[in-house]
Image (cartoon, rainbow, N blue to C red):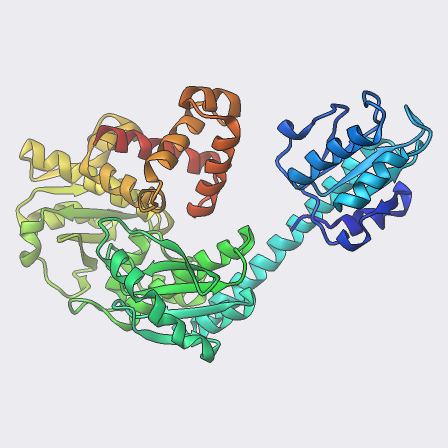
Length: 486
């Protein structure tokens, strides 16, 4: 969380003096902006501490009032005026305007360079980020420990960490557990939204408002099957660290629900395979580590068969050293690379079968895409078995396959389910195509850069990943390429 104005003022070496705004010391300072423009607001986002010496100012109460009014409208954190440069002291007209309009005004003495204030804000921001990450890691460890005691314990721990209310809902929206207990009646207001999400073609989440509160509703489950919903609500929007914690809880709850309510007669290990293939498992969780110890040793190979051959594959999760499951109506087999699961599955079903490259358990989501791409090739060529390593095209080869379309739909689901999906998708495509350059992206889209900034901020809130992560940006770009071809 950004530092407060009061924290910056309490830095002795800066020798800052607050002239107005004593009731606004809790304002958050998101950055420092130095500007001598008479109107710097087009270059501000809000939340900045603006620093100036007034070297280009016009004298007079009206000019000072207009300047402060523009800063207040832009929602800056405060104004720092450097005395002893163009003005021996802070102009009285500026002090009066700041007091009248409620803008914190700080005198920066001549010996204090503006860059020192910028460095202090950067230091406080870095400290806050480190402390936030430390709290997030500790909270995730506590969530993992809570998962050993069941889904209800995860909900209670998550609610305690967030300071809001959390509901665990059944697939039909019925209440399974609430934190605190008095939050249970809120489930009734979410029934219609749960019904809408269950009917969606994509694995979508929703952000809704109910009784003046912000509520995030997330589906739970793996392998495309919804086993329940998690609702998180409160009087404020969640911060980045809190959203990361919610995502961790979703993974743990999805696995726990799969384990407690296995589908189609599958055992715990079959449910674990589905969770691994969906990337919904924290591999460092003690409970998961115990289950992994009973699975085939790495490296492993994942093979997928045509859906029509599902009846020929035994339903037991372990057959001759292999682990099996059914995903999207087709059987998949996982086994040690030395046992050649692809050939074994082709021998059972008669083909077509696609086999992924050898991989570790952490890379099974990628292996799933590889196996499905190989299966598409086997189906197209009439082959009994196709191995991914024999296919040309690299990563971009996934773009033109049904597997790529499915993965793209899952990755972009939070945007596609939004009422402004078309604008958000187009803005994300333009932003990534311009490598994050605001002006170039806005020009290509034909919109103002402030409109683009608003949309990208909304996209960051909707997507679970970090838009600044180059790996995640690459995945989004490929997903957008796939979406464009559909």
